[in-house]
Length: 146
Image 1 (cartoon, rainbow, N blue to C red):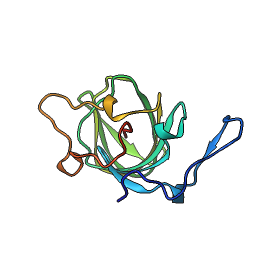
Image 2: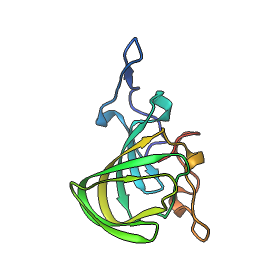
Image 3: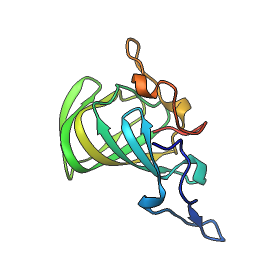
Image 4: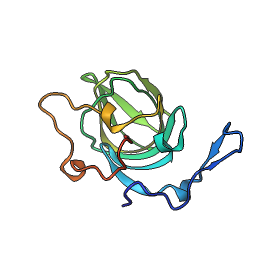
């Protein structure tokens, strides 16, 4: 797993009106949900983030500022949203507003788009829970989240 260092940087237009990165250029790294590839993230200067995330039995957490859009690419599982369970399978799309405590049981590959771009400072764990042991000391660069 990488430490948030990409094989190659994103490509930006001279006008800074667009940014491009290919999946193979986004290294896999650990996250609060499992593992992720940061297609676009806070370090790219984008208004939103787009992460391809392999979620396997994630820790309940929430964000105070970031709205997240999830699109399930493959797999199935159950997502708990503020205590309510919903089934996930390929093709599902959902929006999580700030403050929604969420976690997933199962194994799903999701595209997560967040607005504004998330930072570690905007990832919170409800009282009585804590980050997974393998990510307690985050490997992500300072200032970047999910």
